Amino acid sequence: MSENITIKNKKAYFEYHILDKYEAGIELLGTEIKSIRAGKANLTDGFCTFVGNELFAFNIHISEYSMGSFYNHEPKRNRKLLLNKKELHKLRIKTQDKGMTIIPLQIFFNERGFAKMEIALAQGKKLHDKRDSLKERDAKIEISRYNK
Image (cartoon, rainbow, N blue to C red):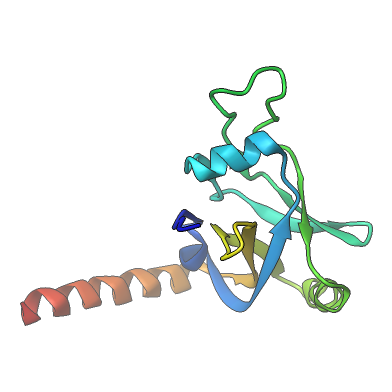
């Protein structure tokens, strides 16, 4: 399978300091997979949290499949993330620290054709950190213009 479908959370690196990344499987329905393959998903407002001993992704919008009938899924339903017990335990401990959260970075398909979600342990940026990010980006643009 030569699919290069990647749905990214473009705000993640602007809003958060990314500390650690994990690759998790996602428990999806058939119509959700078809929508993701069509590129109709949005991770921007998404976040992950524990419910019991399981990690769930909340607020991720996967559009309804256009050809789906009454089998269609709910666009913003909670989706279970599949990680091994060690990773879940490590994430649970680290998220108990103040200001730590788990956010989705991207959805992609691995070489076997399974949908995976890259999640990150992150810490929210303050306003001045966001300004610094903007200044760095503007400086890189100016340098690239000058070098052309």
